[in-house]
Figure 1 (cartoon, one colour):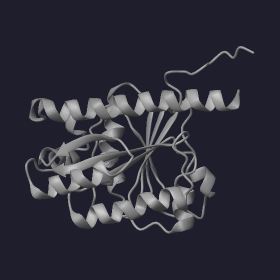
Figure 2 (cartoon, rainbow, N blue to C red):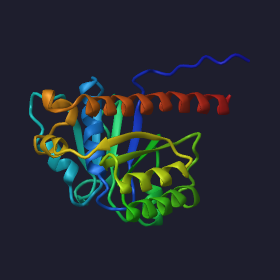
Figure 3 (cartoon, helix red, strand yellow):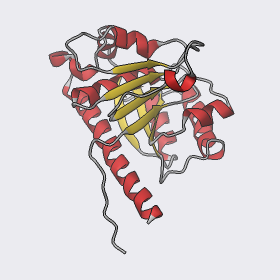
Length: 239
């Protein structure tokens, strides 16, 4: 029996940026992802589950003329409204970026990943971070029961300094992982400058280097391509 595959190019994609280790750049990745998709004309929502509220702080500083990003502060408990209403997504949303807190426990980890299509794991080039990330990836498979065919995993190396012992150690760790590394983001103050203005690094104009723009094009292309493949797998499994 022939099945007609109907997949809209703008169908909703939920991307969760997560690592149980704190300080690895989850908010930086989340805000730049949201900015990149908004600049590409996608109806984008940024959900901030971190009690520190860094993503919402960034969004509140976003210029009025910049492409709009809807924000949901998921960390406060508002007793005046139901939880489902508080987290309700706008109509026709195309990209949902989820910024998660550090140190999630088992049930919270499982709950955080519900409905996620892609998991982005930021990793810093340090032995502490690589060890913590290895444990976290194990938990994704054993506790959260992540299925690679339905939820794509990828790693983004953050704050990378070229030709250092820390980078070489990180590369050895990554080589042992069966998870794609989709970008190696260099350490630069441009991320700080962009964050202070509520912008993504690619929105800085001439201040952003070509490598920075290329890194983010590569990230977006990988995520969208993998989401298309995931949908194909789902259709094939259900046919």
